[in-house]
Length: 215
Length: 188
Image 1 (cartoon, each protein chain N blue to C red):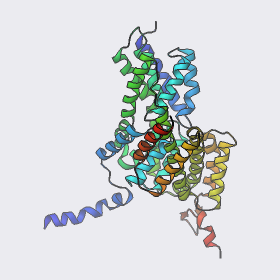
Image 2 (cartoon, each protein chain N blue to C red):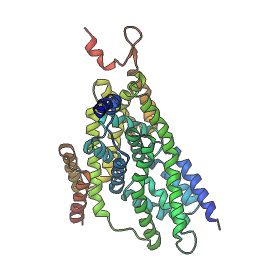
Image 3 (spheres, helix red, strand yellow):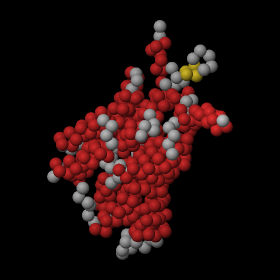
């Protein structure tokens, strides 16, 4: 009887927490980031991380992932480390960040140490070029697939498409570096999506509902 | 001859300041890194620097791990023969210096991001960032494609990889392993 009553209580107290995020334990997080760290060859690593976390593990949605990617691109540091930090913090908090990043960096760091020792001792590069060409091609496919997913998730109206194209051309044609492109585009886009006063005191984001509201 | 401890200090100072100036990803620090590590401190030759870049790009993990290779060379090989414990300390100092400062900054941002999740301005910023990120990803894809697609074989491989990734649930590691074997057999 007593335990039944206890069981009945539990879901209500944890309901919001469970609804807002998947329960991922520190050891699951560690195992996954060790795997990512050990197998993240060939560039385009943020796309690789998205594939594992969003598609395979389903620990996050695209809607949660992409803003994190934006944060890590806007701030200094390697993007793959940034997005991994964001994911670990989202899933397990600051403790998760320490565990996740250590696991992400340790395998490639050990690999680099061994390769570095061999290189500086013997002065030759391992002949791996033909293998790496194929791996790099897959990395390119990975990036392209992340673009497709990102476009699906984020281009919801005409203004989105204008913001997207403007950002791309600022970087590719205007040769702006990424932070400058964000500095220019973010205020414009945020201004467009700013919370607006609707019918009294309640603040709402209405930009994408404008079309529906018109009579 | 500079003492080992002072080299540790130089590594920590150089890499932690680069960590906070790496706006736009790790590759933006490379010119400064070369200027200081090769030109100023002569830890390695510019030929070795280029090789280190290839190694860290080809190996797993972020390309930023080039700092670890530089740290190993500067500390483990500063005498006549390789000193393993000096190299290990040098590697650890290099890794912490390059990743910790930028990570603390991002952790603070991520903390407030999660804390304000659902607030009107947070939702607005999130909506605004989505199409911008999409543009950044396309730009990155373009850059990766330019270096990765060198002939029709790699082009076809990238396209097949894209299709497999979009329409199947295959693990990318499997696709990479197959692509590695195929290109090893096909591209001499």
